[in-house]
Length: 317
Image (tube, rainbow, N blue to C red; front, side, top):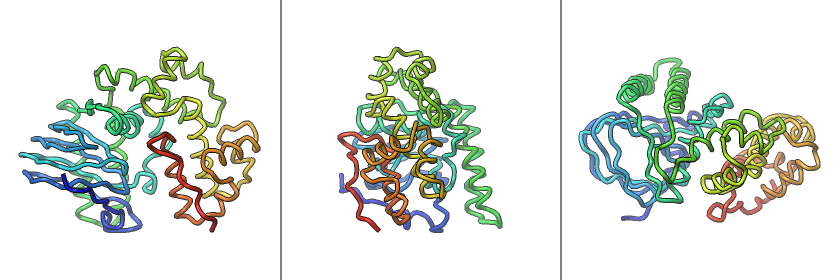
């Protein structure tokens, strides 16, 4: 297989200030070479079939198949036959799609967090698949989304974002964990992630996570490490820091107030954890230019593991 290329956001998006593009493909096609990209890619197949290679493993996609790929995924298309599929390329954060309301859905974490990670690090093949009724509904939404994007009538950005939210929300509601031995804990873990995202600014006990997952402490910890490469406590801290990083960039609230707003018990502990995980103090992070801060904040959204080490300390600006 030829070496992979990286598709930059500047290449994929016709409008730099609106990180979205979509295609509704119908027909058969030859191979598309291996590539990665700087954004999220969502594929929904409505008819026919396509054979994709994702992180070195073949996946046969047919009617109802849904796949989400991030910038960490290498993927290629071997072939497609009589296929009708939607391909969406977007930056969910910049579009304001990945809101707190969306992240309380367990299916969001299954589709956008857990399944991509399992595909990346294990032989997981339990891709999400809609039933016939769900496929028909998703195709109807896809058709409207594509037509709005293609026509570019006045106000089209509003309708594109509205339809994209409806499509992603529908997929997240429809998603249940694949019934495979390697992934039977996925839905329970996604319930815990949804709980954390909803209550991160409050005290969160391990006992509360045990109740919402119906797992004992040791089982819960093993499942988290297996699925996310981090423990429940570490995930809570990283998510609070991610929220704090956003507030540091977008508000003039004091560092102490921000730490308390996102669930830390005091400002000093918040500052210590921020520096420990990100390698910089909150004050230095706030002084960075937007591009450097965004890159560091994006890294914070991913578990810090041996295959995803903390980035080097950025130079001050």
